[in-house]
Amino acid sequence: MLAKSYRIKNGKEYNNNYKYGKKINGKYVFVYFLLNRETYNRYGIVTNKAIGNAVRRNRVKRQIREIVRKNMKNISGHQDIVIVTKKNINNVPFFLIEQDVISIMKKAGLW
Figure (cartoon, rainbow, N blue to C red):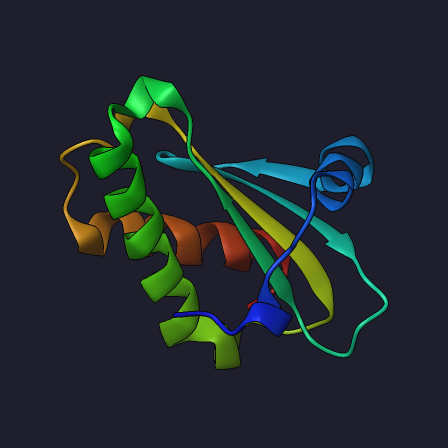
C-alpha cells in the first residue's frame, strides 16, 4: 500500500498531469509524468470501465500499486506520475505488466 503522501489526491492534479505532462505509451498502460514541487514522486493510478467490473478494476489497481511500491527506490526525480491502464490489461500475468511499467519508466528517463 502506498502512503497517502505518495499519492496524487485530487482531480485538478490529475488534469494538470494530462494537460501539461509528457505521455509515453506502453503495451498495457500509458504513463503521464510532470515535475512537482515535492522532494519525492507522487503516483496516481487510473482504470476505466472497459476493463470490467469494480472487482477487476481494483485488482489491476492493486497490481500496479505493488509494482510501484516494489520499485519506488529505483524511480528517480520528483515527479507526479499517473499510470492509466489500457483495456487489454485483463488476464495478463503480473510479470508482463511489471515489465511494461519498468520499460516505460526507463524510456521516460525516470529509472
